[in-house]
Amino acid sequence: MSKGIQQQPGLDSIKPYIPGKPIEDVKREYGLDDVIKLASNENPRGVSPKALLAMKEALIRLNHYPDGSGYEFRSALAKHFDVSMEQVAIGNGADDLILELSMAYLEDGDEVVVSRSSFPMYDIYASAMRAVMVKTPLTHDLGIDLDAMAQAITDRTKLIYVCNPNNPTGTMVSADAVDAFIHRVPENVLIVLDEAYAEMVDSNDYPDSLAYVREGRKNVFVLRTFSKVYGLAGIRIGYGFGHPDIVATLFRIKPPFNVNVLAQVAGMAALQDADFVAKSVSDNKAGREYLYSEFDRLGIAYAPSHTNFVLMKVGGKALEVQQELLKRGVIIRPCGGYDLPEHLRVSIGAMDQNKRFIDALRGILGR
Image (cartoon, rainbow, N blue to C red; front, side, top):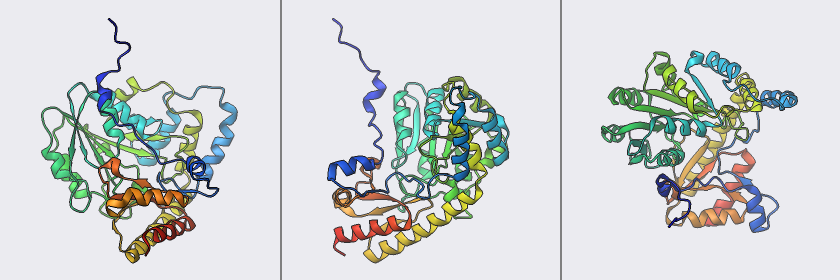
């Protein structure tokens, strides 16, 4: 007797990714008119003006399919980052490339090494391919533990994801540590360096990961995105750099038109908007320093961040604090899903938004 349509077993272990709560939902649920969202690490400055103009001019071409190969877009990325076009992959957000990597390189029972507290999409797509997740703990200061990752490698390991700076902790792994790690990893294991927040890092110790790509190393793939510093989260544009063999493999399985017309022109224009990037980075740094100073006054522990968000520790009532903030029209991110149940992650917003968050938090904590 038929038992009906059965899902494939890889889906049983997947916990769906829950994005930051939409503003509209909070308004409706709490009867509020004024809500701010500091939960999804979006750019409070808005959209790159050059990208916005390019998209407006491209609207008339939306009756045509996009260039499936992204030739002009990939050429622009190659020139901007001083690599060959054959080393450039593009996707519908960096998530798309994570999915393609999983589809291309994972089979039943293969192992994927990730940090216990990092971007959940690594887990979701690897599990969908029925791979085994091997999770390593954070260091005492909430950093990615590359030594633990190296020790976790077995004959079944196929992929390693190093989110640098890491989401949700905001911590960074240094160039020397990354270099030592790469030289410890066997050549048959693909190291994916996820650098979604690279433009916001203010440190001379941050690795030049593209140097490994330029030198032709076959087992390093670097992920980047236009969602953060360029303010293009809503149009979905991710890109990556790797050996031509890796990129060619991804092209064999990617959807034919995964990066749409508007995304491609927006990406090319955003690369030329250095002024917008500089102002976004400057605003972010000022907001980050403000949050640090206020957390110090409130006696709240936090992880020094190299991103546009800060992870703070509020203890066992973290979820209660997050819910109370919602009632006050402030959306931030609980971190139980990242295995950090005593922590909350707050995106750095415009300064008035940062101050509103702190005022609300101070009222909740009674400090």
